[in-house]
Amino acid sequence: MRLNENTVYYDSPLIVLEILPGTCYNPSHMNTQISSAKIIEGLSQVIQGKRDQIELFTAAFFAGGHVLIEDYPGLGKTTLARSLAALVASGTDNDRSATFSRIQFTPDLLPYDITGVDVFNSDTHSFDFIPGPVFSDILLADEINRTTPKVQSALLEVMAERQVTQGGKTRKVSPVFFVVATQNPVETEGTYPLPAAQLDRFMMRLSLGYPDFEAEAIILKQDPEKSILPTLSPVLHTSDLLFSREEQKTVWCHPALERMILSFIRKTRTHKDIKLGASPRGALLLLHAARALALIRGRNWIEDTDIFDLSGPILAHRLVPKNSSSSVPLIITDILESCFSEMNKNTDWTREAYDSTS
Image 1 (cartoon, rainbow, N blue to C red):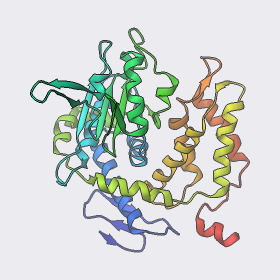
Image 2 (image 1 turned 60 degrees about the horizontal axis):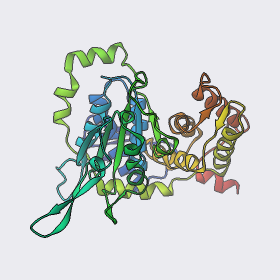
Image 3 (image 1 turned 180 degrees about the vertical axis):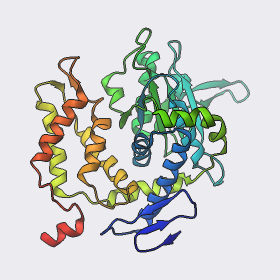
Image 4 (image 1 turned 90 degrees about the horizontal axis):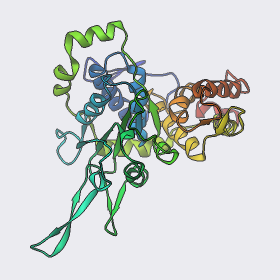
């Protein structure tokens, strides 16, 4: 890594990081920015033309959340999860990719197909536990709404607490356990809508959407899933990811911005078009994701743009409108704009500026 007055050059032609004026460069913060930039770059090579969505996806991963991708078939949902697993190393071997499991959810799936099962061992006359797919670093829950609520609920404990209780015993899963769930927003026959408790376990709900003309031309020419995905190698170790999550706690949030977040969350509960507003968990997840996104963007402080970019993906699936025809994203935007209008638009969000005026 080389450092000059305004730019950090990592030892790769792909990674050039801008130094923002006034930024306090803690080395661990730099490591988070560099590793996240390499993750985003690697994912963007496979999923063409979706850098904004990939940045939010990476923020959820670094913040320790889970992601629900709601999109049409063939847009790269599965490929995105597989690519992330290829870019993350786990265990003592830095060249070994993170463990990846995929569950194809179907109506006949059973809870123990996900969490694991106790099998009687005739030699030892005891039960041996056979771990399920959740005992991996990254889990793809494909078409999660095609299985019954009983099976969907089997994910609740492991997503919230990163542990599985089976046969009276509690077993820990990977500390970086990350769920990427998918569902098709069009097909509803034979599906079971996710209950509010299950939706609340996902930090974000994202949609990739169709690629633009230029991106689709690259896809046709290169077929990145076959030509680039197999060549990806780890650029981030799980131990560094856990360290980054601890460092995110030091990212500064201006008291005025904290009050704005609180006001925003509370207004979702009293809005005339909202039947069920955001919970305190939604507020916490918004703050946690904003800290991760700030580091990814090269800052050790949160700005209002971080909150604006994250509010829709984090809160839209948590709000229940009174009228099914109401657009929740538009309601969120209206509430946000009203909250931002009450703030000083020239506020310097850095801690140094706040301390100098205190």
